[in-house]
Length: 482
Image 1 (cartoon, helix red, strand yellow):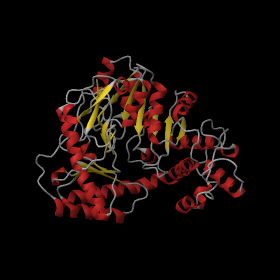
Image 2 (cartoon, rainbow, N blue to C red):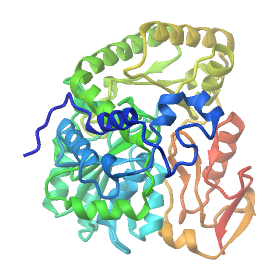
Image 3 (spheres, helix red, strand yellow):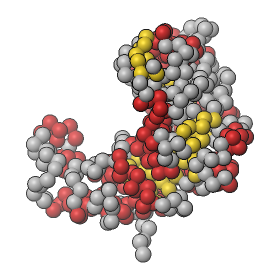
Image 4 (cartoon, helix red, strand yellow):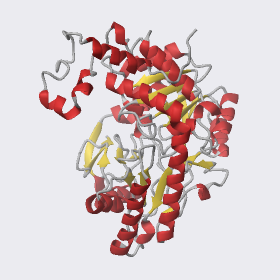
């Protein structure tokens, strides 16, 4: 019988034992504990490069774990209230795609909001599933897309009773949460799996005053970005599954695309971070909530900005709100979010998570300090005083409802041609166009290019958003179906 001791970190402890053995390496990686690449060792430190090792019997293998990785994954499942967990070293992108590939095959329907991360639509390109979009409502003041309403889901299921799954963003990048418990109940009543992109909700599992987690709500699978609010190394993630999901099948799906050379630095960071959250998470996130609420109050006192929170809750499109998210609407001071983002970085040496057309997000988590919050608030007050201007004629929406003509896979692999953006009006896009972050496509393969879309792309470029997804890196041309 496996003993669940959350004070243990079996994978990390195995790595430490291995390091002390001073084994002579005649395997990969070729830098041989840093000796072959002194500059790398100087950058990362001897201990770090010494733990950058290959799979071997004492350290288990992520593709088929039977010892220390298996134990570490069991402990993670226990900490998160899941039936099973998988360590993912391809970021939450690989977790999201593995969820979809586990339940969808070609021509299966999946119900989802259109404001999903690009990894979701990429998965549909790979497997050929057909998206049934539930277009989210938009808050007309701050312009952001909201959550899934239960009535919208019921209508989509009524029109598509053959759908195999429902996909939910919970929370959104901005902190908006849907009524995930009721969504699970509705979907399960119609024999549909529920998949949750919980990339920004790691902390939901470790806080009393936070929205319900996907596993607690009864969702079938959830993708959790441990490297975001959980504190592990960038690119490390968890895939959680609940009772009733075949873990062995999911492992096979994961192994279709995940590397056979998994980084032990990433995996051990998951192990250590899980232990940290299990032992200290609730206390840590209580502090995070308090810091975020303090920052929200101080920013709103400046005037002009709107740091939104639980005041958005309406019981429908905004069923709950993640109070750790410091999302701030900036357009009323005449500046796009991306402009405030640039000013904070270039003039005040403050790096926030992202800025888009009308909002910024300052990501607050377990590593932040109150003095850093004070510095951010002071900088925002300064920016308003120095750079405020007229806000008329500014774009007001982050989300444009798309006109879907073809499935992502059909459009992505179809015969195509490249046109200047202005000549692409009315044509069907065969690639992605998005601002990154947050990575929600403005256009996805299979969607019609409209005047509104063209205007939005031009405006986002003009304001300095990082545009991605197109074959043309300058985003002056679009690939369209012939």
